[in-house]
Image (tube, rainbow, N blue to C red):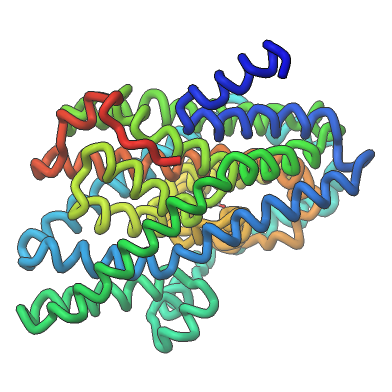
Length: 440
Ligand code: ASP
C-alpha cells in the first residue's frame, strides 16, 4: 500500500468519530453541487433512496423512545410539586424562545422586504382579490382554534400511534405517567418495563449511528442537488433573511438566555451537542434526531431526569426555528402579493406562527404544511398563493435543515438551563470534552 494511502487510513482511523458525520455533510454538499438533480436524475434517486432509508431507520425508535423516556422522566421526578415546577419552567422557556424567534423573523422581514423580489411574477388581479380576502378575515377574526384543540385530544391512542401524531400521544403518555407516579410503589413493574425499553432503544440508537455518516451524506447531497438555482436570483433575500434570523437565534439569543438564566458555558454545551446538531441538519427532523439529542446531553452531564422529561417534549412542542421561518414566509407572501401589512396583521401572523409551529411534527417539511394554519388565520389558503409558494419551495429543504438544527439546539439549551437551575447537571463532565464518551 502506498504511503499516501497509509497516511490517509491512519488519519481516518485516528480522528474522532463525530468528524465522520461532518465529512459526510461536506462531501454531500460537494456531490450535490457537482450532480444537480435536473442533469443527473438517477444519482439523485439513489441518494434520495439511501437518505430516506436512513431517516426511516432512526424514526423507527422514536415512538418507543418518547413513550419510555416520558414515563421514566415523570416517575423519576416523582412528586407533583417538582413535576409542576419543571413543567412550568419548560413552558416558560419554550414561550420565551418562540416569542423572540417570531419577533426576529418579523423585524428582519419588515426591514429587508424579501417578498418584493417576487412581485413581478404575481398576477395583479389575483393579488387584489387576495387583499379583499385578508380584509374580510381580519374583520371576522375567524379562527379554527376549536377544531385544532379537539384534534389534540387523544380519543384513540392506537390511531394516533399509527399516524405518528405526536401531540395526542404525548398528552396520553403524560397523563398516564403522572397517574403511574401517583399510585406509588405498585408502579414498579410497569416503570421497570419502560426502563428496559428505554435502555434497548438507546442501544439500537448506538447501532444506527454507525450509519450516520453515509446517511447524512446521501441526505445532504440529494437536497443540495435539487436546489432551485434558477429562482435564487429572484428571491435570494428570502433565504438570506431566514439564515440571518436563525443565526441570530443560535449565536445570540441562546447564549444570552444561558447567561441570564444559568451558568451553563455556551461553548461547552454546543460542543456537547455537535453530533445532534449535524444530524438535525442532515435529516431536517427533530424527532429523528431525538435519540441522539438525548444521548449527547446525557453522556455529557445533563441528568437523565431532565433529559427524559424535557427533550422528548421539546422535540415535539418547541419549534422556535420553525416559528421564525413561518413568520418570514408569510410576510414574504403578503409582500409578494402586495397585501397591506398593518401592525395588527404582523402581530396576528406572529401569534399564529407560534401556535402553528408547536403543532408541527418534528419531521421534514412539517413546517410548510402547518403554515396553512397561519394563512387560514389571515383569510388565505395555500392554493390561492401557488406562485408565491413555488418560490418558498425552491428553498424549502435547505430552510428545513437550518430550522430543524435550531429547533434541536433550542431543546438542548432549555434542558441545560433547567438542569442548571435544578442542580441536575454534572459540570465536571460537561466542562471536560476529553472525558466525553464517543457517541458515533
Ligand atoms: N423539520 C422540522 C423539525 O423537525 C419541522 C419543520 O418542518 O419546521 O424540527
